[in-house]
Length: 278
Image (cartoon, rainbow, N blue to C red; front, side):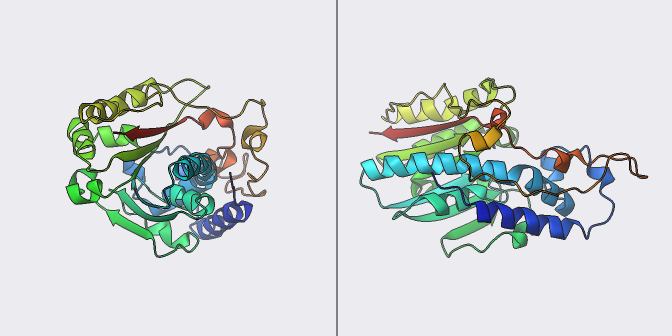
């Protein structure tokens, strides 16, 4: 697995430098990841500072697992679709881990992410669309080899007919497809609700003659060294120091906890990789 320390530092420092020009941030100190917040540019920056490095790290794990599968199957070219891609940390994870694998990445999100301009440069294989998943064409789904749900299954289920979406994906003419799913998990507990949402896709794939040796009802968790967080898995995870937006006890009496506590611990890591063949 390859975790680019320089990428993490570039992202954090760029977003931090930008948000420092946005004035008082106290009104955002209690904001949480919800659909209603994602269209706010300031919240997007806070979201990036808290979550993006850890999510990128987790997708590096998924990307490295995918790479192993692709090499075993002698596949060197794939099309990836990511649903609810946001600031697309999964794209960068794929770019940093899919050696000798050519890929085109199609990222879909219903929200406008104007802060994408603050991200590092991408290659010409990045294709982004602001649209509902229900508006994705059947042709686009049929061309996809790898489907990514980056902590998005819950949000997607609130906005579309999951059964129909699962059925549309299962109509694929391909004989091998992969699902990379990541989930929000607290206290090392299985996110049963989101895993159950994925069962729509599993059941539809089975109906179309697919089988999988992977367990769709279980998730993987990486890391066991308490208090060491992501560094217990790979020392390449290094969140920059000195990223403080509000100081406790200041005259504003606010605590911008979104940056006081960036996600650094394994308790937020919960994922699946599933390979379906027929």
